[in-house]
Picture: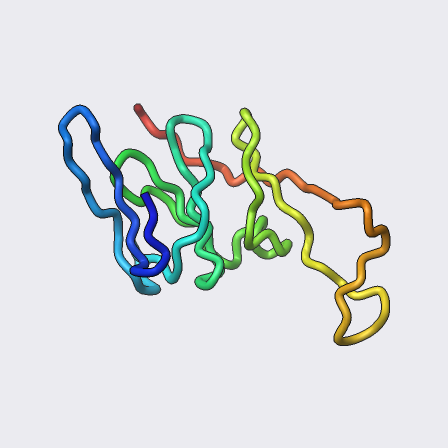
Amino acid sequence: MTDARETKLSVADFAKQTIARIGRAGQGPNEYSAIASLIALVNDSTLLPDVRGGRWLILHVAGIVAIAAPDSPPLRAGARNPLGADSSGHVLTTPPVRSLEGAGTTKLGAEDSLLIRTKSIGLPAIDS
């Protein structure tokens, strides 16, 4: 569960009827700058894009198990805010908008088209 207003991320265990908080607001390990949408990945993992922090956090069970840093290949290529993931674990992204008209504009070449890229994030082996 996410609470963007209070910058909280929690996991609920319905069998045990418990709620556990994951990480906290901040810039360090086990922390996130902002809460965005959660994206389901393979191996019962979840991607939390930390758009403000410029990184991706990989969640599994009740914790942050990996971080794709700002200098990782997908993020260096401009994939800061992913759209989703496919069944193979590839994250779907769009390239950053580049102006075709000069500085200060965001007009795309084809108004009815959207380029979607897939990025492999190299998930760690997780035993579930």
